[in-house]
Length: 142
Ligand SMILES: [Zn+2]
Image (cartoon, rainbow, N blue to C red):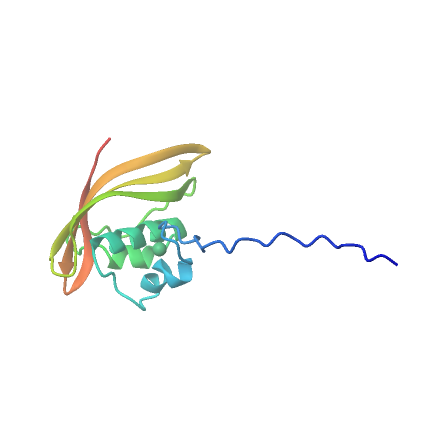
C-alpha cells in the first residue's frame, strides 16, 4: 500500500510580536505595559512619548496623569469613545537622553474617528521632574 504523502503545513514564519500600540516590535506587556504598571521608568523622552501614546490607546488614565508635568497636567482625561489611536510615527527627537533634563519629540499619531483615518502632528516637550521624564506641553503642527 502506497503511503500517501501528507502535505505538511507550511512552516509559519515566526513573526516578531508587534502588538504594543507604540509600534516597537514587542508585546504590550513587555514594552509600554511595564511602564504603565509602574515596573519600569522611561529611559528618555522618546520612550515616554511612546508609552503615553500606548496609554491613550489602552485608555490608561492614571499613567497619563502621572507622566504629565504637575504644572500642565489636566484634572482628568476625557477619552473620546469614538476615537481609536492606531499607530505612532516618531519623526524626530531632540535631546531627551540619559544626560539631558529636557527633550523634544516630533511625531505623527494616527487614529480613527468614526471610521475616518486621521492623524495628529505634534511637537512635544518633555522634562525631567523629580528624576522622571514627564510630558510638559506640545504644539500641534497642522
Ligand atoms: Zn510600547
